[in-house]
Structure formats: C-alpha cells, structure tokens
Length: 307
Image (cartoon, rainbow, N blue to C red; front, side, top):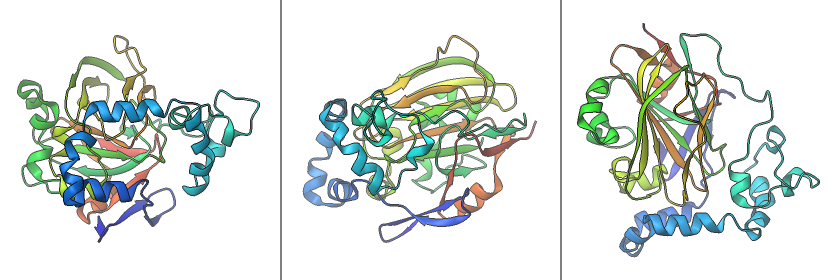
C-alpha cells in the first residue's frame, strides 16, 4: 500500500500509479501516531466532535475554503455542476464547503456499464477487493476485522455472506461523495450500527486495525437482479457529519441510481456478496494482492456475475 507514509494508488482510467496527496495528513499522523494524540483519540473519534466540525462546514465562511481547495488538490471542477450561487464562476458558486463536498457531476460525465453481467462502480473511489472473505485476509486490516459478521453486526444476516466476495471503496475528501446502486434491485432491510468516527485513511489504519468494526455504519441488505444478495455498508469516518440516504428505500432501484451521500470527511463503502455469485475485476484483485488500491471512476466495471 505504501512506502513509509506514501500511499500508492493505481489509476485505472489513466493506467498509472499515483501517489496520493492526503488532506490533513499531519492531523491523522498526530491523532494516530503520536502518544499525546492517541490520548485525545476518544474525543477526536466521538460523534459529537465530528458533527460539530461537520456542521461548521455548512457556514458561509467555510465557502471561502473551496477555491483554494480546488486549486491545491487539482479537482477537475469543470466536470461538476455549479453550486447555488449560479451567477458566480464555479469555484465560488458553492455557498459552503459542504455544498461543494456533495457536488454532483454534470449530466453525461459518468455512465454505468450497461451489460447486465457487469457490476457498476458504486463509488468513485480507491478499491480493494477479495474473492472470498476468510479469516486470513490481511489487507488493509487484520482478517478478523473483515468478516461479514463483524461488518454487518448481525450474525443471522451475515450467514449469507460468509466466504463470499468483498469490495472496499475508500473515498478521500477530494472525491465525489455520492454513492450509487451497482445493479437493479430492491432493499430487503436497512439499519444503522452505532459507533465511533475514526479516520479511514491508510495512515490511521496502520495504527488502529479495528476501525471498520468500531466506526458507525449503515447496513442495507439488497436483492439484486444479476448479483444475488448484497450487504451494502456505508462506513462513517472522522469529520463525517452525517451519512444521508437520498433514495426512497421502499422503492425498487436501478443500476446507477444515487443511494445517498456523505457530508464532510473521507469515508468508505463496503460491499459483501454471496459465495459464488460474482467475482471482482481481475485488475482490482491483482493490485489488492500487491497491497495497492485501484482508483475507479463511478459506473465503470468492478465485478462480473458468475450466475
């Protein structure tokens, strides 16, 4: 995954290795690598702290951070819709940092694969993937932390996913923060698992390997047309003020429909599948074995059906 604290990511779209520029990397290193910082850990990871900070990103003053952020992190802002201040140039059209954070793509910027046997990327993010969830898994955290029973927090529901495929999509603060459905289907049930809000950055995962099962998360059990039953898990993170469900889960969904979004902060979507129903794409599996995440654009192919 990294040399020292350097995070390497394979960019599928550009067919090259990128070195990730981490937003707030100094704060992450302090909070998780510094003894004093670790003493403050319970405060930093508390929901109250993240909600307070997240709410500050709704202020008009926070909007002043947008233009420098776009420039510093080379955001391809021309791919996105303007904010609510339509008369302004796009860099200053967002009333707050959160409005910029949940920006939408312009129509036609991203398309989902139309082949039924191909799963569309549900997040524009950095992906790890495994063909089978076993106790031997050790990327990016210890294997026992990735068992379906731990992630789903319901032993009965988790039975369907033991030994099945797993994908982890990590979003950074620089990313598009809306997440989507990977196939047509319906929601069988959904619930929230309360917990902390630790950082999900690889720097933090080096120090805290139980983050995915300690963090607050929302679990949806989906019945899909081409990939069987899926456990779709949205994992909260430090400074994520809120996980928002924007889709009416009582209705059927189509591949590519927006499911929801994260307010300020980086975060993660985890997808668990039934054994034998689908296989993650070969390049993601290959890179995962090398400890390297694969950056994939929204809607691109991330798995193939085996049914």
